[in-house]
Image (cartoon, rainbow, N blue to C red; front, side):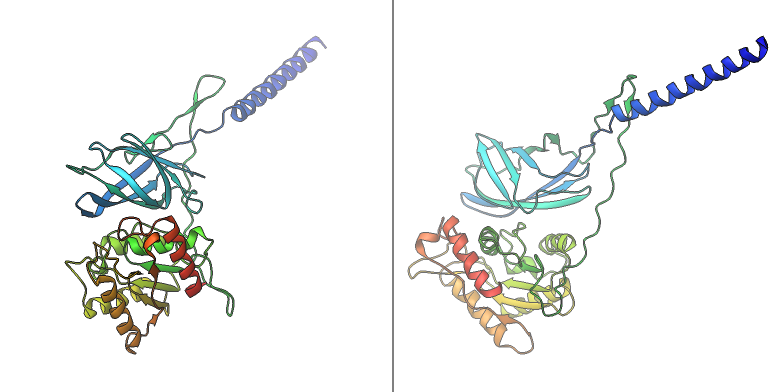
Length: 354
């Protein structure tokens, strides 16, 4: 009897000990959640520059865990100032710049990317900024895990980040309204101005700005150019567009030819969804006496003339949408729209495309 009770006691002790051990392990797992692994990569470029001013473009790639919002910081080293921005809200204190996401691009999944752009001023020199950081994490192209320490003092490994799902193309139901963000566009910062205003007043069909500042006609004639690569990144996010607006945009010294315009149209068809509708227009026109120093005297009128020619050319099968217009009090620097001008352009776009 004594031997039997002794063995039963041992079995009971072992069972209780195992139960305590399992409970402790489960408690430790619950008490030590996996930590985030932040990481980012930034590509900075100057798409155009003129005396005293320039257009900058920043591609932001989140290679860490998903983000629901973001704030990108950097430092200018030569006194540059941001004067206008799109795809983000920018503030600057001395040489320190902070760009916060817009309403439509705050969510960045793992391996997802977005673009922001800006116009800026410079004197003397215009070196690339340094010290890019996304939500406080230095953007050096690697992830930087911060393990959480569990009750026993051992680091709890972070889970492997899951890949972002590939977006499905935006396709409108038959007979229904166009799907949101199913219309792409190409052009320069003037197209960005239209897009900025369109999104600001609640337009849904067309993409928001994505950094086309300085991308004139010659930037789009090569279907593999960096401008088209930026377009394709937008298409990867929203699906290949079922409509594309082609804005003919020029610098005075380069101008544009009709053959170049035809190449733009062909490239737009190649990068859009099969059978996509192609719209075309020139740069905005101004009040009499107003000259855009970038496009030169009668430059906007030239772009409108080329757009009309394409619209009347049955072989191109494009829809000429008419002209955009900026009043004198809607212009910020002789060319680009101020806030009121952006909203005016946005209302004109909404009237064209809904």
